[in-house]
Image (cartoon, rainbow, N blue to C red; front, side, top):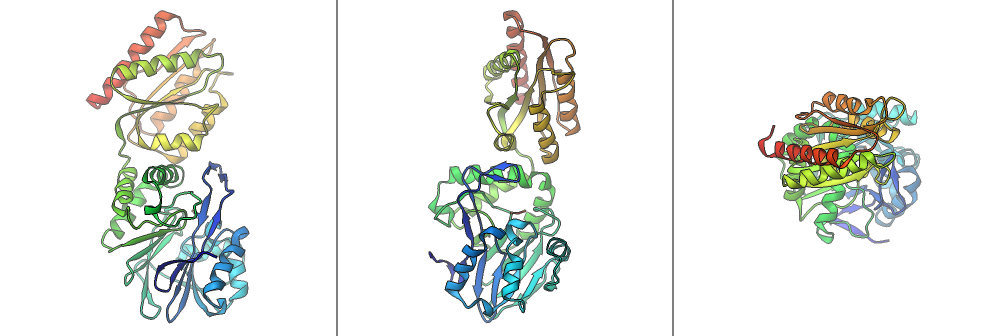
Amino acid sequence: MDKVELSKGIHWVGAIDWNLSNFHGYLTQRGSTYNAYLIQDEKTVLIDTVKANMFDEMWARVKELVDPKKIDIVVSNHVEMDHSGALPMVMERIPHAKVITSSNGEKGLKRHFKKDFNFQVVKSGDGISIGKRTLKFFNTPMVHWPDNMVTYCPEEKILFSNDAFGQHIATTTRYDDENSWDILREEAGKYYANIVLPYSDQVQTALGALGGLDIKLIAPSHGIMWRGMIPRILGEYKKWCTNETVPNKVLIVYDTMWSSTERMAMALREGLLDAGADVVVRNLKHRHISDIMTDVLTSRMIVLGCPTLNNGMLPTMGAFLTYIKGLRPKRRIGFAFGSYGWGGQSVGEMEEVMKGLGWELPIEGIKLKFIPDDEELVSVRATGKKLGETLKTGK
Ligand code: FEO
């Protein structure tokens, strides 16, 4: 098998999931990887494992490098099954090995596997010597679960960052500089928007805590490793975790029954363009909510359109808003619109969700009965222009 040596005696031993297309509801059109790492020093250490069904691939990589019985320590940075799923199989083969994890990690692993491995619980800032090298552990709770921690090797300046800085991409290459920044940025952004966004405050804390570390390689648990683009990805994370958006970017997300709401969407788009905004339009029937989240991440204004069905929103918009309520993007400007036949409740319902997220709603939503006429569409376009102008004034 291909050997990927990060530094002398440190190898990537993960698995490439070329066929992954859906990660608990998040579309992963480019597949993914589960990254595990083997450090051979006086002690032999396995950092994280892989999804259970990919154990064989990881274990074959390990066996090419070392007799697995020589593994002294398994570091479990995160309980979620994409990284710990293969842990029981590993521990069946090397029951003597210590499992180093956080306190919440121990609790979570026990709940998942009902096994009492040879745990060593570490606190944030603790370190161990493994020979010529040291491993230091830092808790990063909620990036992505309460148990998360990262592992840092100061002698090598390598940060094993687990979910942080990950991307769902299956590639034969393992490093950032062997790939296009645009694709990496898009996938790292999609990952952040769909997985990490609700924990942005904790990301800020984690970035602060890790800020003092000298890092030459970030080795996450998904996708490629960062070595040539570290300042770029850190710069993006700093923006994403503070909800910094592109000031003139507007995202219109809508669904439509008989094209009336779609006509309103197009008129709003024209008006927003009149005001100089950069507009992205997504129809919920044709775009998946996890793909739309990539645009939410960078959009200053979110414009939601939905007709009224049975006194409420269409299920597609309901699902999108349930998703976005959980992911909690902040510091956005919102606006709602939609056609209706008699009730017209959808606009108010969308506004309520946006208010609940703390977004500004500078202009009252528009609802139009049945089919908009030309005059109404001119007025909708004018509202779009007014909305676009609020981007310039920040109101
Ligand atoms: Fe990649 Fe939270 O697991």
